[in-house]
Length: 198
Image (cartoon, rainbow, N blue to C red; front, side):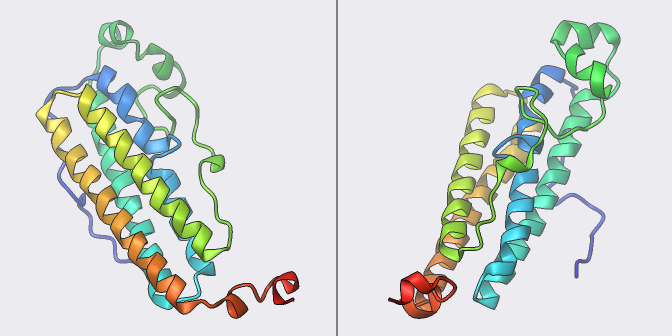
């Protein structure tokens, strides 16, 4: 189904490790509005879409979110590579270090591990597409917050790219909602529930 090109969707080249920065960026790996939740959301919801084009869009965006997950992982790795124990202690990265050394592990900035509770797949195409639009806006806000906190241009550059992709995804999901609404009528949309046929 997929062809994996062995390079990042957008280059990540961070010259200066910074575990404090890693501690906040990690939310986009495994936090409630992060890339892991987004990929799982869209790749789960695609099956219940009544239109092949919309289902394909969810597959495309879900796959792209996996590429974004890979980028965030590369950012985290580069921010935490070759740290001394003194740097780890001084930065407050020691609590993460105890459990994961400097391995990339999906969690929120708060330390809460990734959970399937972060996303929903309702099986109702309109409901799911509205959730997807909201999810993209929440992710964009998280990138906005990260950009307010981070000064390093090597880190900001890929984060700006990821932020722009959230905006594009929001727009595509809006188009998908229009396609879905046009394709559905009350009779076939609610056919699974006899109460609506009265």
